Image (cartoon, rainbow, N blue to C red; front, side, top):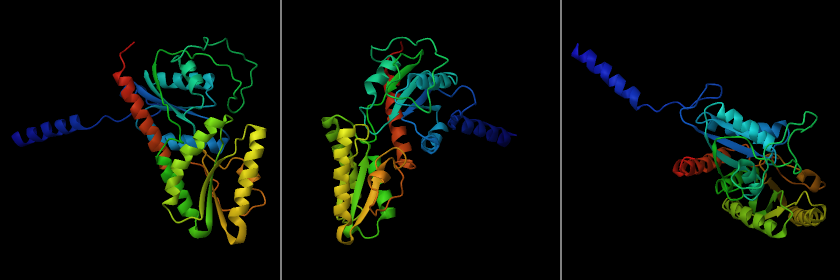
Length: 307
């Protein structure tokens, strides 16, 4: 009898020591009031699927929602409402953009962290929003009683992305001594900001040089949305490709994008090069980075006084 009672008490103690399971989507309120909102540019079906699959491991730990679009208040409002319906009241907002500057001030206004955004306007039933928002979508403050903390870094700042670049190159390289690795990114319009992109991504590209003694490792931005600057960038990129492939040289192209190969195939038309046509996703490292950003924001929210 005493042995049976001792076994029962031991079982109770073991159950009490076990960690609570994180709530899954659709399972009601989470174990805590913390959740993650991930902002991503958005694109086609494959692009969005890459992001959704990357977030799946986090969704098994805490409530997670994605808001696609370039800081689109409508998409952000919908994502926040889905989190709040699951009991979330403290929200870490992680911006899945290459640059930490992308849409930051706009996002702060939408979340009410910075003045400047008016209240939510009356809905327009005739508005066709399309697959994702454009730069021209009006800014307004979302309706929420939750507390928010916003990430400051972009994927260009993420040390984890060096490992992604190294893996991509290692899988593609055949003869490093005669190969040039060209890392291509979207790039901004402002010249000073573009120089910052090149420095930051260049720091990540150091991991490529550790893979092997490559002939050259070059980082370039296409500056895709600014026609005059894009023409200059395209000419420079094609000159790099010409030099890299001369006299039997090889060219490896790695996109520094969240997903996909973007317009780089058209820019490099006529050249022979090696590419897997994947961006930074799929990779475990992006999930690790999002988790790291979210945990830092969680600590910030825990330390902040209640409103």
